[in-house]
Length: 307
Ligand code: AMP
Image: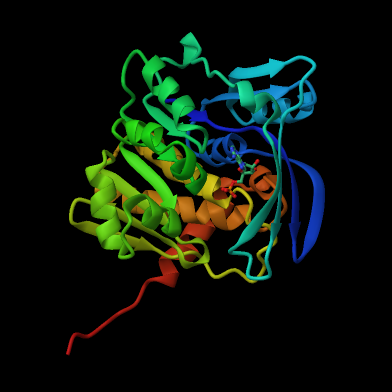
């Protein structure tokens, strides 16, 4: 069983109320791949970097069962660079710098060895890039999950709608769901978005958890109240990686199993925020993940006598 992760591989500079890093490895595909590799290998990355990207980082990814055959390395050019500063509440951030560098000319190529992948995670990238990957797959994957952001709704809405028609699950945050649908109620927003193509919608609400919509069903997964939140960068991508990684491992794409998958995604995301960049994700073990998932079970476990 394998899973494809398409998305940025980057250097980030991050400032939170608790510290600052000037250059740390990041990018959606890195977070997705580290999270998913806990459940399924190989995780097959499709991305692009410059020749400034450290070989040691690529070796570390490979040692976790992450395949980089689909990672283009462009000589003489720089990797994508993103910089952000978080506000005190850590739920909001300002983007300070987005230097696309190699990402500006990214034309993804799906290697032959990735063709049999049954699970496809499209990280946040230009919708036309996401569509190109779907169109290159000779057999449609069993499940296609897509992330996007308000930026693409502003500048490439038609392209975005074309991709939406071809995916199974859309993941967005609450403000993006409202922008895409023009509805304030998330229930109405979900109905409208599911009419655009995806059969499932995941609405992420940061420290307030996530909602999973499918037909007339809705499921809520909390986020674990953490004592220390150090750096939320990549939490959404880590959530996505945990979600699709678990589905790929269990090979079950029913709504019932997706409920478990969003708890798994939430558990992985709760590790991500504990250290800068993907550092915490690189350390965690299966036992850590199991313990964290049981904390989630405890969080929402209660008895009630109906009156
Ligand atoms: P998240 O916190 O889940 O939104 O993901 C943050 C990661 O997304 C960072 O590591 C960035 O390098 C990456 N990122 C930020 N902006 C973009 C963009 N416009 N396109 C692709 N990746 C991005």
